[in-house]
Amino acid sequence: MKKYIHWSFILYSFVVFIYISFNDYKYLESGYHIIDNNKLKEQSIMIDNKVIKYYNYNDYVLISENSTNIELEDFRKFVRKFNNIIVAEFSDFGYLFDKYKIYLDEQELMKIRYAHYIKPKEIDKYNLIQIVQRFWRAYNERRINIFYIPNHSKRNKIIDAIKERMPNYNEKIPLIKAPTINISILSVLMISIYILTISPIISILYILLYVFLNSWSYVFIAIVFSFVSWIKWKKHTNILKAVFLNIIYGILVYSTGYTYLYIYKISVIRGVKLLLVTLPFVLFLVQIKNFKLRKKDIILSSIFLGTIAIYYLLRSGNFGFSTMFERNIRDFLEKTLIARPRFKELIAYLFVFIKPPSNFFEIFWNIGQSIIFVSILDTFLHIQTPIYLGVLRTINAFIIVYIIYILGGILWKKKSK
Image (cartoon, rainbow, N blue to C red; front, side, top):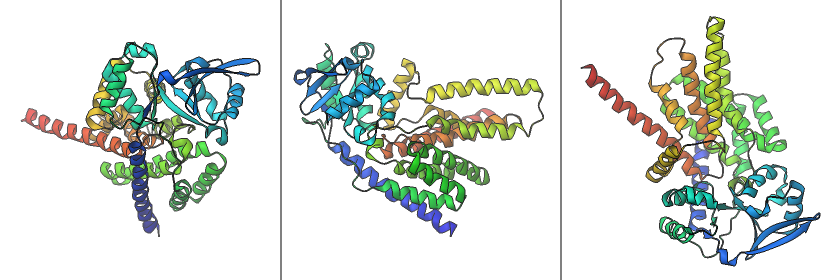
């Protein structure tokens, strides 16, 4: 029975992948729209003796840099007065909205959508290629098909370059739709049946979380899958099968959140960083008991791991820092491979293909290997990113490291001879 459930689980994930990919294709086919600044009409409204400024644009209202004085309750009242609201992503108010949206109900959130925005000082900072790549990323990776470019001496050049890179420009703002088939519930049932064969208690707990604490349920099941895939990997030690299984798990987790609010980044999944640290941390605790170490060894290794963990978390967040050199590498990889592999995944694969220098280092090697599993699952928790990009990103990471490993082995043999 387990075998039939397992293969049904895999077959269902393929069907889901095809369905979602087709929807992604239809979204891209509808094109993108660049806001005409000449048609923006600055307006204001009084809410609780506070003047709130916004722009009128056709049948929409746009909130951007001119609305930083809005507090949560002010914004809720503002939302009740309008039906079609555009929030400029990465504007000053865009950052406020990221904090506010977790407190808004579904009816309020359904009125809102994003436009990708670049600040004038960022236009001065980046070159034309980097700016265009940023808009390409917003459209292709975050399903944002409205672009808002402020008045600037480079504005026309930017628009021309965007249209040259992405030819499917739309004179009108494209409509965004909810999925025609509600696959999220079906996927939850499929996952719960699969987990039932492993642990009935976890299966029941997952369903309860999905119903009552929905935004936390995705990370919960991703953490469960990270442990399941880790145990299977240690039994069979076939990295190709392990990666394939994690892609299957990732597709199913992704499909449970395939709803309007998550697809268009209007609502957020909670606790993503828990996924990134839970398996590595548990492995550290379990393994450290098996070593008879001096207190000095434990303290030094804890400091070492703690430093890496802090850096790992800082680089994994939405506001992680990166140098201009790294940005250029990312842009190059995106243009070359379409889906850029994650750097932490590329590094983590080294712990699979290279043996540890001693038994003690197996602790760090196992933790390094575990990052592959949590990183793949984390990729599929970004439901605003088209699913085919998540799969391609994972495959690209594996292929790149495997090619490096093969070439490295050939060079090592030649050097040894």
